[in-house]
Amino acid sequence: MEGIGGDRAPVASPLPQWGHDTWRMYQFYLDKTTPHTTYRWNGTLVIAAIYCLRVYSVQGFYIVSYGLGIYLLNLLIGFLSPLVDPELEISDGPLLPTKGSDEFKPFIRRLPEFKFWYSMTKAFCIAFVMTFFSLFDVPVFWPILLCYWIVLFVLTMRRQIAHMIKYKYIPLNIGKQI
Image (cartoon, rainbow, N blue to C red; front, side, top):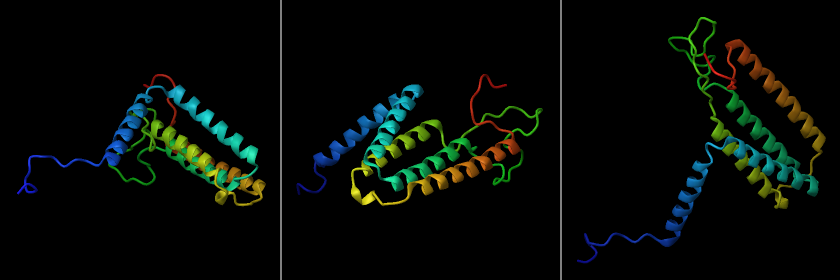
């Protein structure tokens, strides 16, 4: 009757335990970077520069870069958008102040700054790793992709800025709010 209701706790396999410990240590150091915004973004700029140098040096992987650009544009839209979109949500009152006499309501982002930074950094790291596999080096005429991405960026930002003007919100923290 040793197997039924024994005194011993089941011994966890060492590999999943090691993975869990590694993940906890990674999360610990990631949490420690939270207040250091400038250092985080400088690190991301270094990673982005390394990625750009890699793409330039191998003269390829333009599809990977295009996909990265589309993903970063999507992240930027989430970063600049309010948590609750006044166009889509029907509520009892206004969610963003629309008149000067309305009380101040802080801008709450759909994608917080830390998640924006973290997703952006992960995307650059994943794209960098993809440049080491020839499977992702699809031959394309890169000026067409660049022009298409610029047009997409301009149209999307124009729509986003029009939305900001219509609902009178600024997604940046500038000075003391009143």
